[in-house]
Image (cartoon, rainbow, N blue to C red; front, side, top):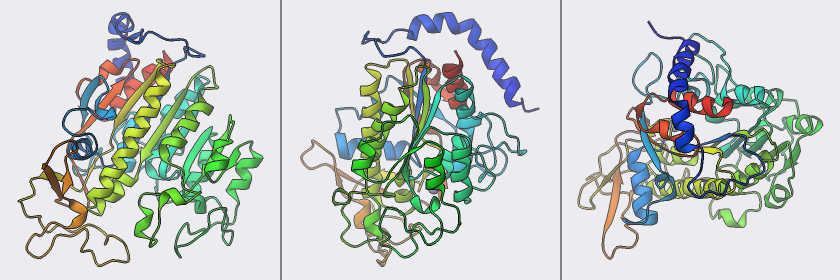
Length: 438
Ligand SMILES: [Zn+2]
């Protein structure tokens, strides 16, 4: 019989009590030794590269850092593996079930967001943090109402009900929310702050102005680089340009750096840490690069590697923050792999599994889909291996969907040692809960 989440937690607690004294001795003091942060309250940062399997991590390493210098997300001292299988059907997870395993410690059905397989509503890590007087935050390079982050801040049975998710994020008083998808917050007919340049973008369907509601509830509101930089908190809602590195696919000639409404996810993360760390009781922050998953669905290796830069930059922001706040557990992992991406030598042909959209969307697919004789499409390589003279690789794909392999998890900070080895993806919940409640 399946253990309930609670009894699993009790069992885990029992095991933990025995080993706790040793663990505190092992991890209580950071090697750098400068623990003079404003508070000793423990906090948690979870960074998800959506769809980031081991091949994605390796490709990002080779293309961006080369063969010697270890990329920031892999330079964390603890490494393990997590399975990604959902509760009952099949072997492959979606983002909703993957993130729910982290947020409530139960494997669930695909599509369920922060809700158990029998529609249970156990407390999420955000609820647990709030019970401890800690603050909560969400950061995404895509819309902040998407499934991964909603699993923490807005449990719901249907991941596509984005406006309902936005309302729930407010009702559950998530303190800091930064990312894209402003259209889900504004009422029909109100273009919001970001100029709508693509017809179906940010389709507003509701009548309620949730930005106005947030402001009435005490949230500061930001929409571009300048207003984000001015945020002082403690409660903040930043709705900026969605998926900046992906947007050129919709909009000819788009350059993220020339768009004042595009704010890099690492910058949003840095600002979020600044606001959340004002709480002396600590915080939990869940951050995601959803661009990683979109790029892999489209068989766009170039943008997988770009999204990897986002993840590494986010890790650098957190590691810099941890120099004065070593009581923060950092966990970097993925909800599942996407695309069956594989690193191959340039001489191999590509299989003919096409991406789920042409790249760009107004193109004919020749940039991301293999030619009739397996010719390598430009978005799959070649990618020079950084720091080498003539070495390069290309990537291949087995499916435009997710795959069911284990994903790496790397970690640093309190109790990070517990991530060593192979675990269920629910282990993220178990460890984070311990950090938040100790
Ligand atoms: Zn996906």
